[in-house]
Length: 79
Image (cartoon, rainbow, N blue to C red):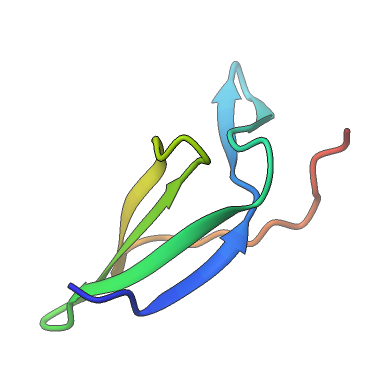
């Protein structure tokens, strides 16, 4: 598995409680995010991971295309 793309980002979580959406900061600063293609047929699967400065994994998902619903952020969290 080779890193297909590395970028720097702040990591946030979004959760819903009782119909309300909440944002929470996961990283204190910009962290490296690795995107790796782990499968390309019959569906394309990307493994996306991020680690904080203590090398603790703070984000780890698999994104399947077609199949994973993507939602664009239209409003950034304040504060």
